[in-house]
Structures are given as C-alpha cells and as structure tokens.
Length: 178
Image 1 (cartoon, rainbow, N blue to C red):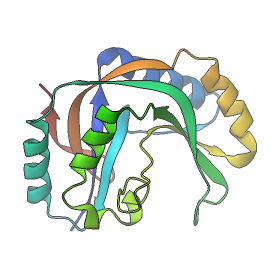
Image 2 (cartoon, one colour; image 1 turned 90 degrees about the vertical axis):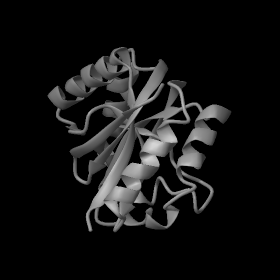
Image 3 (cartoon, one colour; image 1 turned 135 degrees about the vertical axis):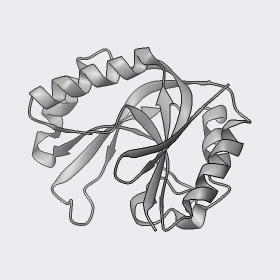
Image 4 (cartoon, one colour; image 1 turned 90 degrees about the horizontal axis):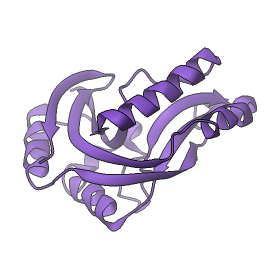
C-alpha cells in the first residue's frame, strides 16, 4: 500500500503570501517545500485509499470553511537521518475550533499515523499542527528566521478545503468545505 497525506488548503491570499515567502527563501538558497501551501492534517502509511477517501468526504461534509491565525514560528527539530537540518513552520493559534477539527479527523485511522505521520499523530496527545515553510541547516536557522520575520506572513488565513495526496505529492482528491 501507498503512503498518504491529508492537508488543509488555504484561501488564495494566504497561498500567495506563503508562495512569495518560499520564493524568497529559495532565492536565498534555502530548501523549500514543493508541496502547495497547506497545513498538514494527517500522514498515513499502509492505509486503504478508498477508506481514507470515504472518511475525508464524510468529514468535510460536516465542516464549513475555518478561520485560523498564524501568529508564530515553529521549529521541528533535527531527527534521525536528518540530524543536520530543522524544519521551519508557521504555527497556527490553537483555537478550540482548530483543535476540535484536527482531533475529530483523527478519530479514524490513527493507527496508521506512523513513520511519516508521527508529528501529526494524536495518539501521544501532543500533535504538531503546522504549515511547513522550509528545511534549514541548523547553522542557517538565524538567517532563515530573519528572512521569514521580514515578510508579511503572519495573520489570519481561511481553510477552504482538504486534499488527499499520495506521499509524495500526487493529488488524489480535493474536498471543498462549505
């Protein structure tokens, strides 16, 4: 079976802000994500694709578009074979609505959030809800953070859809929120 990632997609204004920031980081030599701007909801290994699609469809039928606020940066630490780099992310404010949305999505198939999904799993009651911006060598963290902080990246965004992708990065299906 394949691995899958479920992501929350943003309104056009937010997508453009994140894309512009990533272009600036790329020009400065930092490694940026090739994924479209998103907030990671879940990542799965060895899950049945049809069941995941059905659950995502059922889930999105219950939710409207959701406001989120990006007020801070987050650093995913060096880990395993990637011990020389860290991941810089936008950190959404953990509003009750966002936490309820995130945790409810995980009420099914949590046992498949291993490996690539470890940072998104709720099984340890401590998931890292994030929007990846770039991967940075540890010695370059300060310069990357300075560039991020000099951009107009913080503020409100709207989650408008969930998308299911294969890992790595083939869109399977989009589910628009009401």
